[in-house]
Image (cartoon, rainbow, N blue to C red; front, side, top):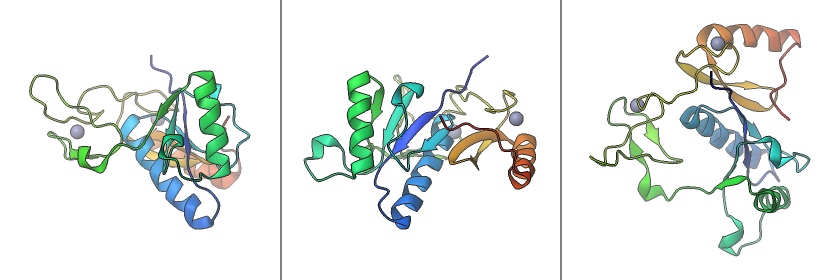
Length: 171
Ligand SMILES: [Zn+2]
Ligand SMILES: [Zn+2]
């Protein structure tokens, strides 16, 4: 059984607009990778608890001044050897040949045909992060993280969030 190890999504967080953009990116990360995506709004995360760090916005190699939160976490990811996934050039964006889902993060092409397939259509989606059923999931915001949940779990989690008993995916 696959255990969903969360990924950390980092980028500019100086303004509410920045944070909203980072959440939108984290939604895509969750949707396209099937991993819970924690939005880094401060630098108090231990990057070693994440299977990868996804960067939104400029990276160290761009030579521009970076958000202070993002730069700390980026440097730690490099120091600890955690996978740092930089934004994919727009030109590589493509639609899944089977279901049409737009692939914007890590477009995977079939080696033989160069056709593009999404995680679901490749049969590699890890399923629901809560009940671990191999069902179709949708990203649900739980405690600052976008978590891939099946429909029943998403509904249940929604009522638990309202009741104040949301599970903690953020590390
Ligand atoms: Zn697809
Ligand atoms: Zn579920």
